[in-house]
Image 1 (cartoon, rainbow, N blue to C red):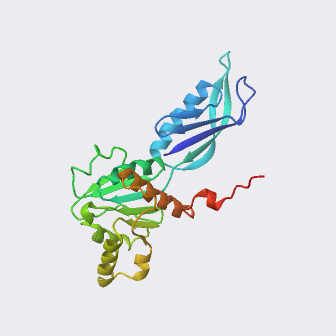
Image 2 (spheres, rainbow, N blue to C red):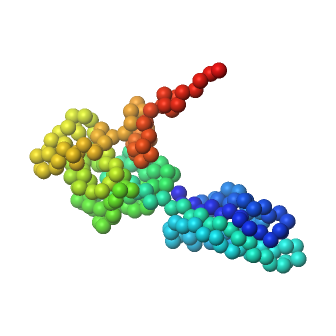
Image 3 (cartoon, rainbow, N blue to C red):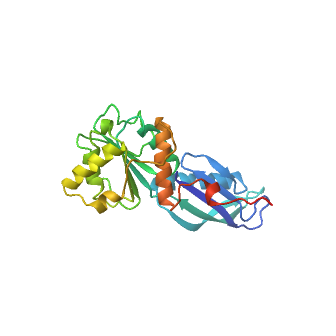
Length: 251
């Protein structure tokens, strides 16, 4: 989720203000902390609302106005840090797994794009938090940019469109491409794509069957395993339990 951190870096000696005080403002309007005075917090919140709409990351020192009990105005310097994630998740298929997948991805800061050919599934009522909804018969992305910050998940209904989506996905610069399905289904899809001209190198980068082995079968559990794999790959994680990676020694 986009957020802006405000840090008080210089103040003229006003009572109640302390250099280093911080205020975090999230895109949904919620806040954490304070700059020391309600008037400063309000000025920061007003700025944050406009900046979040623009979606431009950056860091700079800004002047805010604070007044003492005599209503004398003083200039206060505040460091403004804007955080906007450039991660994107494209989900082909708007079924049961897609619902928790998109919701969880949004919490993790992904811009989410859902693609399906069924308007009764691919709509804002089912996906109120999605950043983009693309509904068309051929599952094309309609100009949506795919770069190295993009993860692609292919979970179309009954695997009906999985092969066509994967054929296009492996040509892209996406850092992660995953497709749901059994080992036999994945193997058959790969064979058909090889026959159509895809290379082994292109298919080797596909995470299929998709996700980490969490043992869950419910839609939310499958979604969690998919996102866990994406986050692990993005951060060069091992996907192993931390207790096997970092040993705790009892003395």
